[in-house]
Amino acid sequence: MSQADLDSKTVKDVVFETFSEPGGKTFMTAAEELKLVGKEEGIKEGIEKGKLEIAKKMLTEGLYESYIHKVTGLSLKDIEKLKE
Image 1 (cartoon, helix red, strand yellow):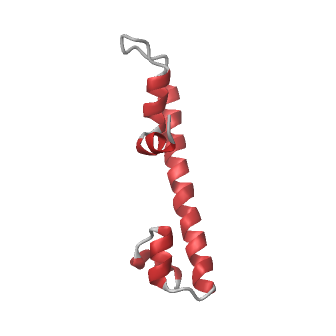
Image 2: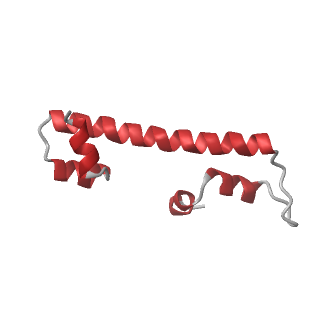
């Protein structure tokens, strides 16, 4: 499976594909599914937090907001908030 395939799928999708029987029956319990969803949300939050930290450092180095936006993908509004 390529990186592009992984990027377009959620953790839940990959696990279902990996642990599904031919008839569509899965080996995952509801608790396991909730754990995966929570883990996925935590990863997304961590990535966003990392982007904000990097943007803040870039601002302290005097880089332009438009460049920070281009590199991090953060909105100009979010970058402006970091200056406060």
